[in-house]
Image (tube, rainbow, N blue to C red):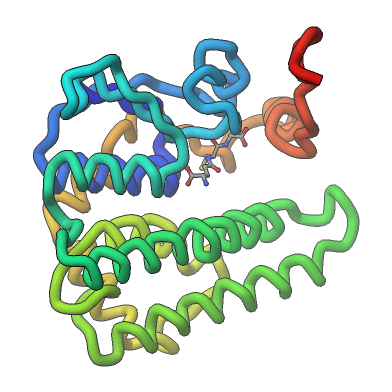
Length: 244
Ligand SMILES: N[C@@H](CCC(=O)N[C@@H](CS)C(=O)NCC(=O)O)C(=O)O
């Protein structure tokens, strides 16, 4: 059984899409990031970056001790390899998928996250217009990268639907809040509609939706509490007595 430490955000939904597409049994272990579960010692043991998703596979293929992983890209490569699905075996095809998966992890995910952060922030922390323009433009550039890629390919890596598509989808669902216009990206839109119609994608996107919180409806003091917890995080001190 797979334990998925999860909260229903785009980074979490990448993994539930894959699990649903593979029909792989899993258990959601809620990691309530608004309540600080990501800073608890037991969670940090499996995810030292204090971010979810994280995963524990209690039945790894080698029959050994459970395997714990953090970083959605690493989790997806692991699960797709285990299922032998959506991840081609052939050398060139596999590395093409790796390349686009890492593109997502290094570009589309972080830039979309910052875009959402600054667009939601408003003026409470001073003038954000440069940051909003910077990240809205970067996200626009990245939609363009996908649009050009999909101009003559059905999926990001060719004719086959792979984990590179699944990992890129959840961050695009909020295109409107990212200040984008899909009319600018017709080849991307064709892909977006096709993926959105897949039952596995729909189940993955809906996973854990009962946990969702509508932040826009929270009282001001609750929003201030969340900001104090989630924003401006700094290094956690290492314990005394380590290797020097
Ligand atoms: N690169 C990581 C990013 C994960 C990430 O940023 N997760 C967010 C939720 S989408 C989180 O756990 N935030 C907790 C926090 O900010 O303290 C991945 O793809 O797994």
